Length: 253
Image (cartoon, rainbow, N blue to C red; front, top):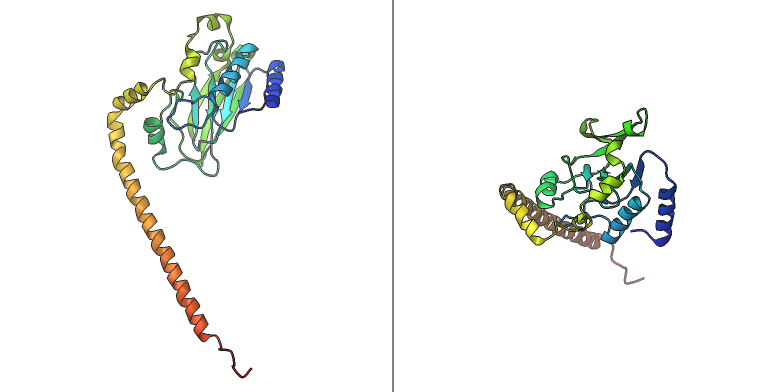
């Protein structure tokens, strides 16, 4: 995802950072790596990013991202070795266009991931982040509100600093296979079969939806073809009339 110069710059900024919360922004999502179809960081880049956070023992790291056309809050499902705490990601998009028909059902049952912890916002939205600094670092927290087109708060969550603190005790008791789990796409094909078996009725409910979408698409395609054909015939007819009415050249000249 990043070139060598960019990694050097990022590592230097991270090393000298003393802020309570360290907000790392990315155009694409970072955490969800286990969807059947995904748009996120490559495995090597994700692991390098996690290792740098752990290398300098940085607390208070939160990811923010966009790109996917819906709002979502994500959290690692195991504590990464070296990092020492669960990482959070706030994804918000978009302001001008967002979501798609059946998007919530599709993301929950057809393209699921193990990171999202709250229902997605499948409409025009933006995320508003407020910082509560408290009397000291341990009292600080981040309030995340997803606000839709009608200025209604659709999803909200508080992320406490005390849940983002690096600790040697946590590092020593973390699951050593967490990296392997984080970097796997549902770990195996059996996981996918198990998931779809578990949600069999929801998926069966989607079949009429996709069938209807397929029929509507083909109807629209047929209409477009007829309109284009009609436009060509109309153009040909008008052009032939213009040619007939145009004055013929005088042979005497």
